[in-house]
Image (cartoon, rainbow, N blue to C red; front, top):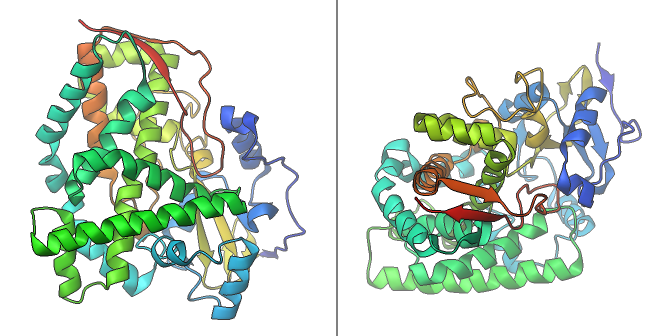
Length: 417
């Protein structure tokens, strides 16, 4: 027998994702949510939070769960929801960011995903290994004699964006600006949606749009062997329209920046916090692939996503009405002891490791192979070239928010061989 749920029937667990304590260590909060069982209503987002692996994975794989409101709300209802969440009056953000491959469903999602999927297969990504290795080697050459670096700003921030930029067709010299635009746009998806953060998101979306439009015109005149040229042909063939072209390019570039930078930083921090695991990886470099997967599980860089149900659904013995919004706490699910033995232990040889850091179902992360290859090369090269790596700041500050997980900075001391 199922039980109906209302927003008044909520669990008494303190949930403060903008607090410094949560940024420092969200896992006690996640544990409290899991231990309470069921789903927890979070009023700030008008959302039901799923924290247990069983519940999160079930929602992710359920075809009755969607990202977009279009199939479950009228235009007037959507406008009201946007105003309530301060998503309104953002013409370009609404046009290119709030609508995208990530936030579409059904036939639209399938059509857009087909245009880029073939370029992100394991075989296609593997062809980039030599190019990535060369870029990483040069970067380490420039850092080798520094003695101390900020792993995030001096290293991690330079690789993912440049590699995805090259794949798309962005000149190397423009990649640092793309990171700024991406971070300023993505920040508005978190809990704090103040008018100032809204202004920043819309302004940066506009600048990003103008940049991509100019780059598109350049490729139309002179096509190259890059993703922008491929997408131009897709638009000409009627597989996407002009706005979808821009939103897809933006999404690929934004996804190629933040989350990979964050998991590189938290992965490095984990190796330093657990020196026996770093020593183990040095002794057996073949463990790098399972080590990278464990970095994603242990500190999920995108710890929160959402879904809406398009019909009444039952979860954990309770019925939720059509249109209910669910928050998927990947960071909590990936530390669930019912799914992972010694879930709070960082184990670079963990196998099997069926984590949810890449999501699941039709929205499974398209760039997961590229992100893992970047990390494979960066950490393998780092450990090979630097016999001494030490943490300078014992308690690095982590980003605040529900949708991100990664250190702002990570000062480390390095000594080359």
